[in-house]
Length: 160
View 1 (cartoon, rainbow, N blue to C red):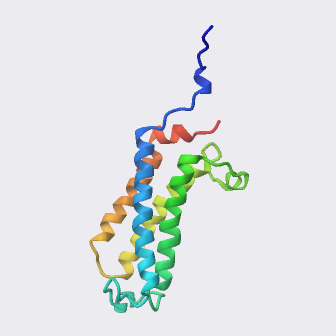
View 2 (cartoon, rainbow, N blue to C red; view 1 turned 30 degrees about the vertical axis):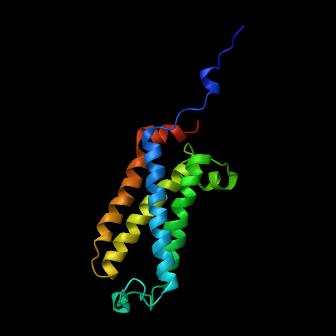
């Protein structure tokens, strides 16, 4: 007698929006890891030919601290978020501090990354001269937020 798996025993398919979210998070991670590493390697801005005068009026004397923030928060953060969205590891500690108790903590992390990127770009536009990458990465942050909030992505991670 052949048996069939019950619908409850089959893992739900990842929605297309979730796959897009993971790809965008990875794209963000690659860009920020490269940019952050470049700023850390050349805190005076030599490699990217960015003058230190761009930091006038900011709390930074060179690009080292912005490079570290870019690398860790906006590079490793989305890399971690991508891995978490795929693997869905459990963490009792992170579930306890998750402000959305019915959502998986990794889903929350994804939204935080998007909001963090938008804030980073908003502050950057106030401190340094205009660069064409600023609106581009602001849009990347908005895309991360929108994809995270889409009903199909939210439903995939919803915890009852």
